Image (cartoon, rainbow, N blue to C red; front, side, top):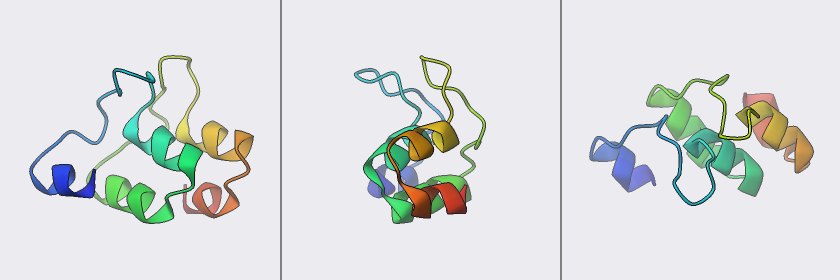
Amino acid sequence: MQAQLKQGASPVELQPESGMTPLAWAAAVGRVDLAAALLDAGAAVDAPSRDGGTALITAAFFGRSEVAELL
């Protein structure tokens, strides 16, 4: 995804398979580096996924404290 961002991919477009924002997905899997890159690219912290949850809610749900602190 970081390569896609460098090529101009949207940091806020919902993922078709999961309905998650890229930032919420990074939060779910604990990818602090990717979450930081998405934020640098303009991802909105409060953008909702299809289910209405935000990246912070996702990070908390999955126990990803490092990502939650970044957000």
